[in-house]
Length: 87
Image (cartoon, rainbow, N blue to C red; front, side, top):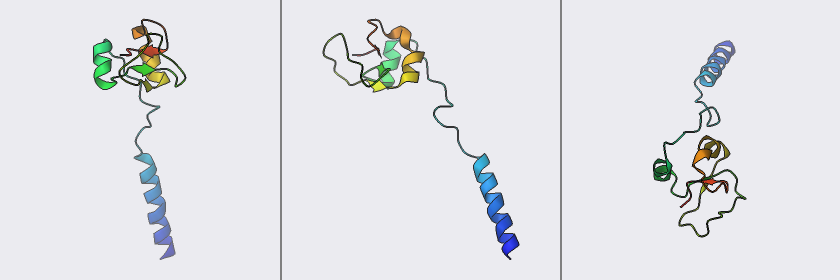
């Protein structure tokens, strides 16, 4: 009886480990066509770091902080302040 339970437990662990979903670090950051498309998903834009401040003054929304997403869309940071598509 113990052997059967051990086999069932071991097979459950093996099958469970093989069906794990990929983590968010495995997924590539999405590159948006333009700021309009990016702002539909991230209204405040995307910041590369939480310590970054906006050079342009007041903004309506707080940016989402994601270094990977910022790096993928860095070309949309026109004022080079570390926040892409802020508004």
